[in-house]
Image (cartoon, rainbow, N blue to C red; front, side):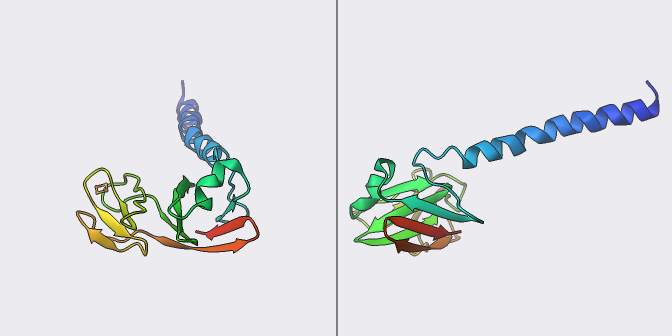
Length: 140
Ligand code: FES
């Protein structure tokens, strides 16, 4: 094998290693069990008429889609990053306390994303939500 063949084989091997993450990313976006999609750009559309999204019809209900936790907070829809800023676990929603606890190390966030309890020190990202008919649009 000469130098050119060696470089060509490394380049081909590198492409093989790089391709699978791109393929996995594509599958991830299309595999939302709630039938939600990212629409154009980074908007997330949630059709409230679909049974998979029924949790959002009740006050205190929530669901997670595309790394976002969407909450029905007494009829107002909220959307925040589901990823805890401490070490990356998924937060949940505690409707009775009205906050977002992280099960891993005890951080708690407000529905405005602020840290209420550490060890997290950074807030959760908050996204705008608009509702038109049965469609929620979340702008990431
Ligand atoms: S990952 Fe959430 S508190 Fe540590």
